[in-house]
Image (cartoon, rainbow, N blue to C red; front, side, top):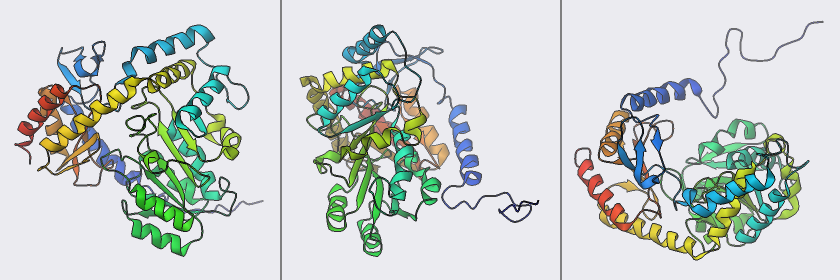
Amino acid sequence: MHTTVIGPPYGTTMGPHRFRNNQRMVPAGEAAWNLAAEHGMLDIRVDASAGQNRLRDVRTGHEFLNLASCSYLGLNSHPTVVESGVEALRTENVTGLAMAEFRIRLEAAHRLEEELSALFGTPVLPSISCGVISAAVLPLLASGHITGTDPLVVVFDRFAHFSMNFLKPVVADETLVLTSPHNDMNFLEDVCRKYPRVAYVCEGAYSTGGLADLEGIRALQEKYGMYVYMDDSHALSTQGSNGEGYARSVFRELDERTMIVASTAKAFGSTGGIAMLGSSSVFDFLYRSGPMGWSQGLRTAAIGTTLGSIAVHRSPELSARQRQLAENIALFDRRMKNRSIRGVGSHIKFVTVGENDWAVELATELYRCGYYCSAMFFPVVPRGQAGIRLMLRGDMTKAMTEKFVDTLLDVLGGFL
């Protein structure tokens, strides 16, 4: 009996490259990463005991302020958060159960769900990362199993994070996948007019600067019943009375057409990810679906640090750090208003310089001056739009921010 193999033409093993192309991306990315390594901007090993405002390279002794950290409020070193992780390990006496949580889980994990749901005012599903949540949810959303309908056309914003974009080939096995120009509500409305069921995949605060058009997205949802899947990882904790983030400033009451996912490893100060659900009807289903089902759950220490961070979120300290972050953003935007920098109003700023070597040289010079900012290049950003990304934090004082802006203006004088 002979088996017929269906595939590319004989002698051809190249894929169709409909949604990704490693043959193009990897060489370009590696060339840029190697350039950064040659300038000593990778594999910097530090002593963090004095905090992110004063990291020390253990090999050279060079001290610097970290402006590449996503811990936007500095809660990753908060004593309550750290001690809660240690205490959880002592209490449970196990690092984790090392099995799918829908079968057996620690009681502390169940308490965590309840605490997160109470904090954010909606059912919350935790996981080891929001990337795992996206990998579990998006294929099921595409096939209609989240909505209980036929498949949905899935539209990815062009700037949607890689943790969502890399799932396009998987999602495309279930439905039609389209890519929208960034924040293009006209494009999105045209899709909604053409197809009866549409899901939009985007970020709230974008990782390379800029914000989603929340009002526009909400208007289309109300007009056409569009499903919204939004990753608000870079805004969780930074705003909202309980740290609910940027997306919830408009999507206050979630419904069955909305899911907001976010990392708890950034401003929240712990590790893992969460999905804020508009309905608890899919809660158990998601727990046993795909990567959520076969991945290990949150480790004991992560449960502890997350509970510790919830305690901080319920204290006056959250609003104090949010205010300091907002002041630093306003200071930066005021001082840099005549510069072409993406991210006005956001704690994430992106300075475009164009070529990869210019981005690396700019980052290297800032590091020499005592500030680490991330050089970014293709495929993280489009070709020819390399630059540096910097993140402001709520545990930076006004004086620190002023001094950094002074330095940035001096250094930029030689580049822009």
